[in-house]
Length: 357
Image 1: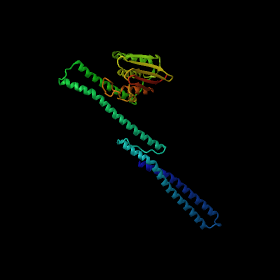
Image 2: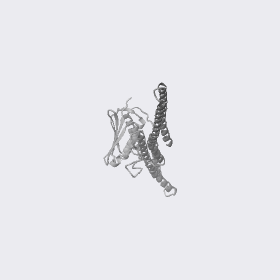
Image 3: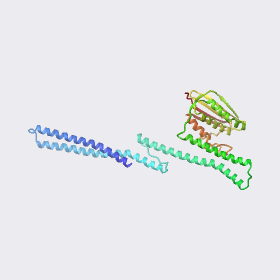
Image 4: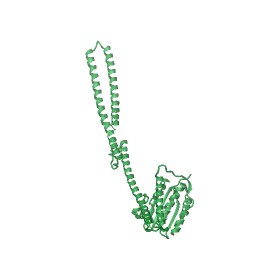
């Protein structure tokens, strides 16, 4: 930063001094020329001594004026350069502290110029880094929690069988298999989430019939609903087209239906409806399940968040399914909204922009 300060000072001094020096030299030369011309033409009418003193006084006054102007230019340049570089020096120190992990440090923002904008951007960067650091810590803790439960279960089961406390049986081996499947699904969800958050993630967009895609995925998952005794129905339009990614839309529908099935008791109902507005295609997934508390509703799209805090594998999944749904809807330029009441059920409403080609 000292180099920047010196360069600004030198530039200010050089410009101001150069202009003054050139102006002074030109003025002195021109004055001397005209006085010489005047003396040659009026030698008999004026005293040479008076002319010489007058010229000397004029030249001296110009020189003193130039010196004072240069000193003033130097002083002004130092003050202006210091004023410009002071906030930059402070931002440099703040950036160095941020690099050392002090993310709570902030720079002082004054004025409304470009430097103030830079300071505001630096403060915003610090806030985002703090947020990402908090999310990283939370995600690490959540992943550890999700992995710890099935691993502890597997460890205890294996130890019991190795020590002869338990005799391997199909039921106990099936329990171990379920825990392994839970781990596999968790890793798969994390891979999908990582892929969607990558800057290289791209949708494969084509003109598609939304209702047809929704119906196909409903039929693909209907066996799970029949097995649990939950009624699954499709309602609404059957011919609604827009530009979207067929595979990703199917992933959205399956995740929402899986989540609805998980929290809808036997004898309940899950309905899917496709509607059309002037600028949007709407997909509604509603159930008659246990519902979600109001204080939990705004967190349901956060990764690893579950309204059921027990983390029991029978009461919920990894807590990433709705996060994936939210990311895919946003990738399509759409929005997602959820309404729920405890004991009455939940409704998820997805808006996808209608783009026809």
